[in-house]
View 1 (cartoon, helix red, strand yellow):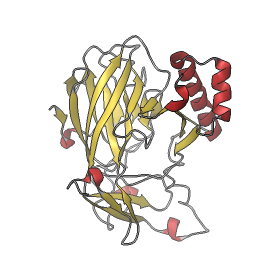
View 2 (cartoon, one colour):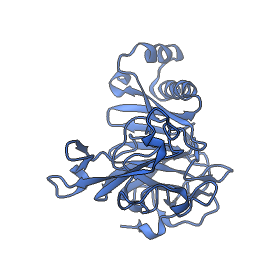
View 3 (cartoon, rainbow, N blue to C red):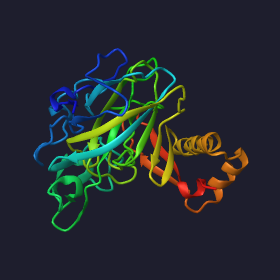
View 4 (cartoon, rainbow, N blue to C red):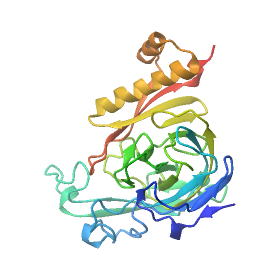
Length: 321
């Protein structure tokens, strides 16, 4: 199986001019060995998020969220849609989260001074499950609190049309740093193709994350991601879409949050109208009356140029008949 090894997965921009790190055929499984968001800097609680100590933080924008890629897909052309099948994510034996002065919504807190007066790094231990691997493993917050490893890919995308976007704060219809917990094994991710070969990038895996990623970091970890890529020829999605086995999710990123929510809902309505035979009227009324219609707020951290990320979700059972 072809792979991008971790020592090669250190791209910090999605750049349409990059040479391919991998060439694959549609449907071919391959692997990318990813770094955590800080390229291995955080190994213990003694490693603080002091910008002056972090490699790449002397640059603007900072060098964070390293990616593997680009992966060139045979036959991919401008105007196609790339379908990303996440087959497996195997995380490392620990993850980290870091807070401190000027970081996140409480980085200047007077209510809780400890949050803004000093840097704090927490290492979350992972233990394997019955399979002997982290596929069914556990994240240990402390000796009392734990939860299942629920990994997802935080940053992925195709090369943007004309611009070069960083892996730290780049976001758009093509993907980017969106931190969507549904970019997970068993789900399909739809991305527009703007360049020949698609030029796909991936990195920034999380072992788990709460909605909004409130502090600005989650359970950041290294991982090995197995995936395959397929093409929808001469059909391009307007923005990232996600298909779960039992639901559809349309995504958008914007500020303020209500713009992200409204536009994601518009994207979902368009999906229902174009692909599932809904009239505009029925799609509009469905999202306002269906008790299982959901808005997911995946990322809402006040960090750099990042927009807020929302997903409008509808179960597939309402699309039948």
